[in-house]
Image (cartoon, rainbow, N blue to C red; front, side, top):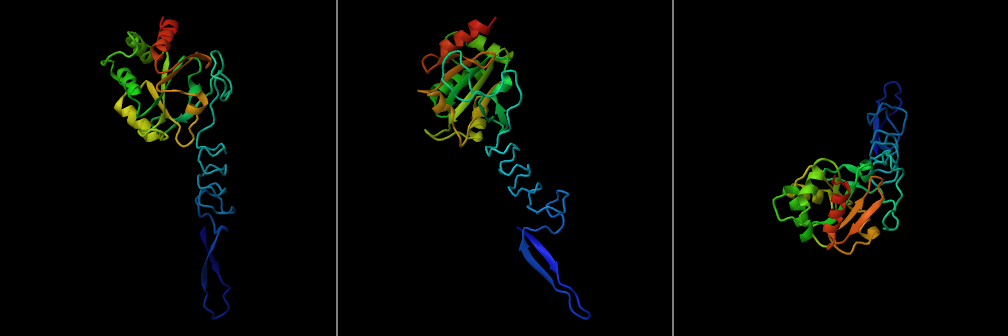
Length: 246
């Protein structure tokens, strides 16, 4: 609440007293938004949630749902279909999360380009082996000889590789943007997006993952084309190389 200055009326010879009371009623434009008639809340938009975007939910993204993530941008794949059955040929959810830099990122921005989703965790050994190869190309190829072509396809934007970290360094611990940034620094590749869900994880539960890494391949229309568990990752890469590798 803001300080409210009230001046008493001054009779002849009387001393004018100034009182300071605590109130949410405005004394001019105290929050700097140019509006001197509103109830002054300190956030610049008059809704009292502290974020300044006017929607009242306090998350600062302007869409009113409280998740802090921006609304999905328009794309040629249509509206987000939500979570559904993980059957080949079905529409895949337009996952939204934070990237390694803390920015809201919608998977649907890649509509029109095949996407490989690598669901990993920070503590997963095989996930790190795969990430290190994709970063440097100098370690043993975990993709049974198709690694060089895969790296070439990622570098040329023929496909998009997205790593979703669902857990941090400790087993069962939800991942954070900091975990995503640490992963990117450990296995740098500016062509690879690292996504983390934070306090509202959905990917593990909704996709019914049995182990890590698990790979999902989406076609140009964001339909599920392949699913591969920890033992079948090379088969998913074979499908990608054979289908889009030229």
